[in-house]
Amino acid sequence: MIKGVIFDLDGTLIDSMTIWSRIDREFLRENGIADPPADISDRMRKMTVDESSQYFIDEFGLSCTKEYVIKRIEELVRREYMDRIQLKPHVCEVLDWLDVKDIPYGVATATYKVLAEAVLRRCGILDRFRFLLTDMEYPKGKNFPDIFYGGAERLGCLPGETLVIEDSLHCIETAAAAGFVTVGVYDEVSAPEMDEIKKAADHYIMSLGEVYDIIS
Image (tube, rainbow, N blue to C red):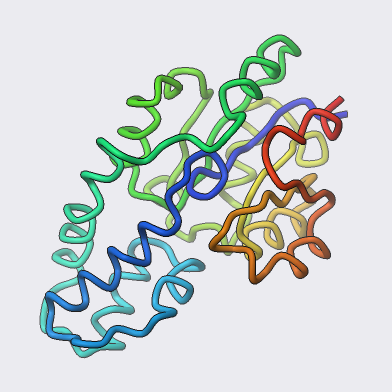
């Protein structure tokens, strides 16, 4: 029986994944990389903010500091989170339903905390979540289960009672190996991994509107 839910943010609650590809390439161009790799954001997906910033410096020989990379990318993407990014379909209806069922929920994300807070606040749902965990609290990111264990503890649930909803393969693999019940949810950016996600996850859905039968 599911007693708590941990949501991913980007690609699960908000429609933001394609923005990161554009921003990563924009940052590299302004730092002298005329033709950034088309798959640069795919490489970043498994990394924390700290790791991805160092990767930019090492891989492309940038002369800036890691702190500059972190700050500049946050600046480039901030406007999208503050003004433009929208919720994915069915988010509010699912949260309403979980409230009726008295099932608590929170967010675990690799996104900059200030940006995650900004988009959820603008969309009117920030205060509905029990927690918003990022790699500020769990610097090893989602390649390790600590962030999911921390979420389950805050929900008052055991891993086997906690549903983790993610769009990324490596996050699902981490949560599944740690004993959580996992749901892969479709997103355009992660679509190439769909077959692998279906194998790794306990359930797979095309939108959040299909999650009711899994929790009931």
